[in-house]
Image 1 (cartoon, rainbow, N blue to C red):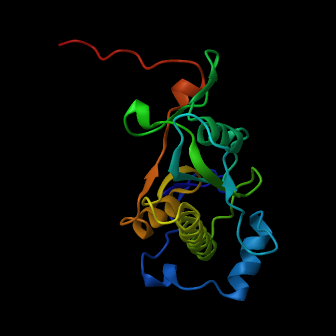
Image 2: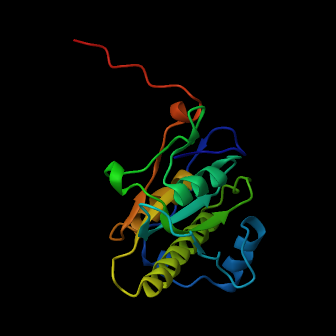
Length: 202
């Protein structure tokens, strides 16, 4: 089930969970992707290294994926990845909550961005499958590249900042189930400057 922006109601453009999602994208699929994603000429987004900083988690890379309209999503995720801070200051929380103990929440070592340019994807199962494969390919390539840069001293971990169709999220979760890729939770209440009310007592 997915809330369609085109239809204005829930639709079910499912993605088949099979080994086909790991197959190389065809020229036709890549052509489809180039109509909707900001795909660089060499085929994949660049892995951007973050300058050394105190408390940096060099073994972590941030995978920032925006496949639906969310104006500040990419900038906010970049901020969290580059600083380790989930807020710009007391008045502006990004809404993100980095998993793990607080001392481990320093800046990441690098990040990469996959972006539709703040637009919605059409409700198309074949396109969703191609996008899922593309995101997975980008993650695999970035992980391998970063492991080489680190010299094999530590296992590379990923933080996934994701905004997009539910079928893509589910399929991507299935593809990366054995990877060290953790979804970063986003809380709209924090982003809007509000807090959740305390639980009622017994």
